[in-house]
Length: 112
Image 1: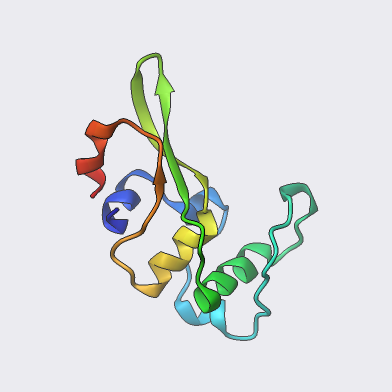
Image 2: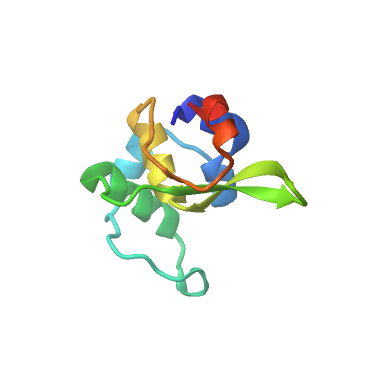
């Protein structure tokens, strides 16, 4: 899917409570963090370290995207999983992102 079009609907940096910073911020003087840590056990710097990991190592599992629904109508896009991977793709300058998509088929053209 198009990263630019995904960004029109969803900002992963905002969702993580993290402001987007230059690429060097994520790569300099930070120890990348390989392992997921549950939200209630995270310490300061977790987001920066996870993004650094994905920037350096890449990922095999695509982020998971769906829609929040109101009755029978999709209301807004949501990343179910993969916020840090999405941030890494943005910072890497990628233009496309492979995702697992669970939304309505007719919405795909607006995200591609």
